[in-house]
Image (spheres, rainbow, N blue to C red):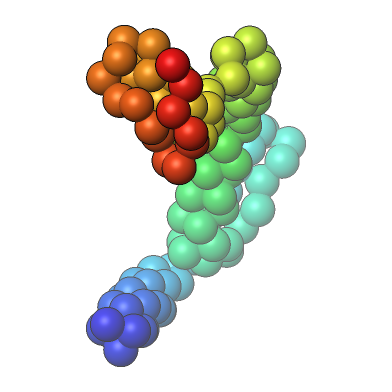
Length: 112
């Protein structure tokens, strides 16, 4: 399974490398009329756009994720404690004794 994962990673790397080598054509980049760069490789422009898009996407999700984590923390603090299995078993044994269904539970002496 690890071999397959590595083969996929190497294949993806080779595909990106091939794509980068095929897109080295220089292009002008003009941000404003005063700010411009000539002869920037196309792949650099494409990778910069992808990086900026990923950064903006992460920033857009940061606030909602923070709010959800805070809400989960508040809900966990407000939630009633879950009874342990031992206390549930004790309650069931007590109810069984009170109803007369059992006389002795888990080695306890008979109480009548």
